[in-house]
Length: 130
Image (cartoon, rainbow, N blue to C red):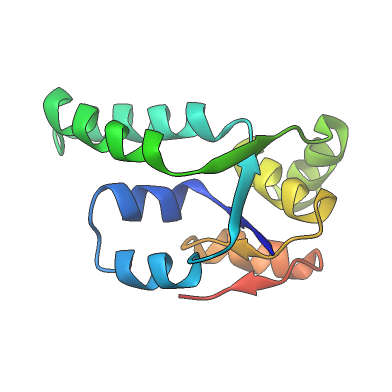
């Protein structure tokens, strides 16, 4: 079985948030896939942490080493379909990419983002809850 993993879950793992054990348990012995945009969204998340002075470059580099060890298959998505989702629900493109990925690859989604989860469910995406 494959699971679509989004950036919120990845960040929780690599920054040792309290949800990390549940995410690891839920993803044990499954394939992880996500849209190709995850790399850029991870970078954006760390740059936002830099701006708020929540993390140092050294801490980000250590977290990225962990990120690079997570076996995620990065999959292309249908950009037009993702833009239709973004427009219909007034959400960011990154969130629409994740929903489109789940729909396209017919896989459940693991996210910690409540708004994303709600919109994904409204689009017929099955969720993995932590």
